[in-house]
Image 1: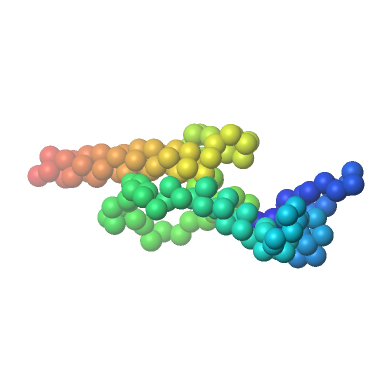
Image 2 (image 1 turned 120 degrees about the vertical axis):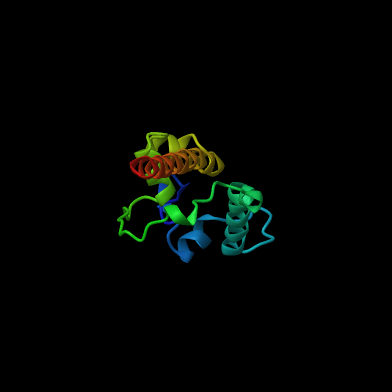
Length: 135
């Protein structure tokens, strides 16, 4: 999580990508906690703020009949939810990085998924109707 995070010290920027860097540049001004422990506490708090909504999340579920065993690929450079939102033209990468919260992204994805499932239901219904009309 911190490999791309940097801090400024003495006019220079340092990556927090090692325990030594964290211990050197992150500290509790009251000196109650060791730097690494302090950072773990901050990280835990940030995760709680960003993901606490998931405890009560009731997003759209894809009905099993619409889940395919077909192979698919995904990019290694983006989380699947981010990729799906960009492909569905619901958000740009910059917006997801700078503007939308994690909860916003989940809500947007739920809208995309709702639309996709509704289209699948409509397509399924149309196929069944076509079969009935051929008889």
